[in-house]
Amino acid sequence: MAEANLGPLALKRWPHRRGDPLLPFDAADRYLLKQLDEHRRGPATLVLNDQCGALWLTAAASGPAWSAGDDWLCWRAAVANAEDNGRAAPGDAWLWPWQAPPRAPDQVLLRLPKAVSLLEAQLAWLADGLPAGTPVWLAGMDKHLPAQLVPLLEHWLGNGRAGLGWKKARLFTAEAPGAALREAPEPARVAVPERGWTLQAGPGVFGRRHLDIGARFLLDHLPTGVSGEVADLGCGNGVLGLSLAADNPAARVTFCDVSFLAVESARANVADHDRQPERHHFHLGNGLEGIDKQFDLILLNPPFHRGHAVDDRVARGLFRQAARRLAPGGELRVVANQPLGYQRPLGKLFPRVDTVARNAKFVIFRCIKGSP
Image 1 (cartoon, rainbow, N blue to C red):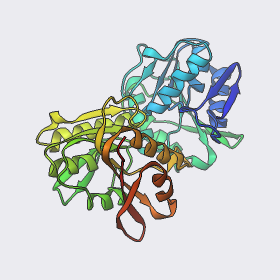
Image 2: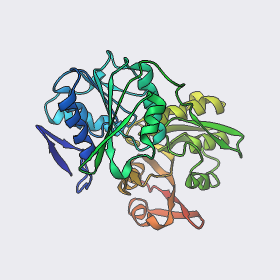
Image 3: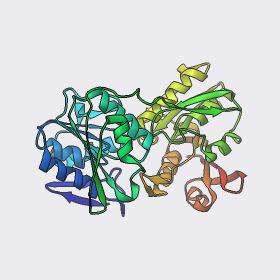
Image 4: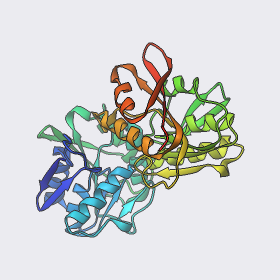
């Protein structure tokens, strides 16, 4: 597994994977910490979108620090790295969207998130909650910077400046206006015309403007006659599990995602569109880990990115989780891009793997777990 030192800290990504090529921090994190070291306004720091605790743990060594984020894996990495380095676990220092810190910070370190929609929502939140003049320092790697970032800062904070590049990273600076300049962005609306639904999706939630084409293909090939426990694994806005539940009233769906805002989006959509919302459950975490039940059916439209990096090991890890958590005779139904070649790893985990449907881009597999 990749481990790297940042000053006195020895950091790892989470979950720990042998041969993981991704490091727990990069030059954007180093640039933010350099800015904090040279221009700190006071002891208290608010951190947004920390990957593995590098920003939060470093800031917390010099004063109160809070880490705010949407990704459960980032929270878990911060916990693990705090324990490994003999530091206090985040506890109340971790903030899910949109929890306010217990006191106003003296400065904000914001690592640019992958989704511009999440960045806009975070900037609106900061504008509304920070005292006027609080410095907001943002950084990201050059190859991942969104277009027109300075105008975006000016739109939400009323000001913004681009700094110099450093080790293929770039820093941006702004100051909080002291009051919201605009209404916070509304959740996106996603039409599901075949159901007559309009689903909501929070900022940064996958497929928030349009249904993912893989998910749409799987929607046309959901099983019927389903009863018992079902998991919508990597649920996003919940469209797969919600659609299956609509046609299978005896099914109980657990909506699972690593994103807090995805789980909350699915929860809201179930409340709006399911006739028996109380039968369903919601799980924020690393796939199915931490769920103490077996499933009769698992639906999966797996990711093949981890952050900005293409990484099919995320999907393969979810396949292994599904194989462990299915009841004997249970089914994993998964949609995948054909070039990814998932039939082979699935065949190693399941005694039976059938092709349900195929089109020019995607294939749907039906994987059956054998008897114990």
